[in-house]
Image (cartoon, rainbow, N blue to C red; front, side, top):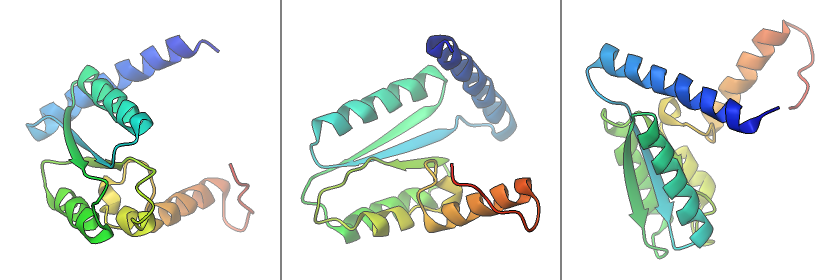
Length: 143
C-alpha cells in the first residue's frame, strides 16, 4: 500500500466534499480544535490538523486554553462550540491536564459534532451501525 497515494486520494475526496458542502449550505464547513495546556506534541498535532483543514478548503477555529482550565470551564467552552451553528465538528485534543475530567469534557461535545466519535452516544451509534451491517442476532467482532 502506498500511504502517500492513499493520503492524496483522501485529501482530494474531502476537498470535493468540502466544495459540495459549501455549495449546498452557502458557507464553508468549520472544524473547531480545542487544546488545553502546553504539551508540545499536542500543539504539533493540532497544528497539523489545522493545516490539513485549510488544505481541503475548510475553516478552522482554534481554541487554546491554559493548563489551569477546570473541567467546568472546558465543558462550557465545548458546549458553546456545540451550540454554534457555524461550527460543524469539534476535536478535543487529548491528553488534557490530569486535573481535568476528560470523559466529562468529551460528553460536552454534541454527538452530531463529535468528529472523533468519543462521546458515549457516538460509541452507541457506532455499535448500532455495525450491528445492522452484521445482521440481527449475529455477534459483532471487535475491530
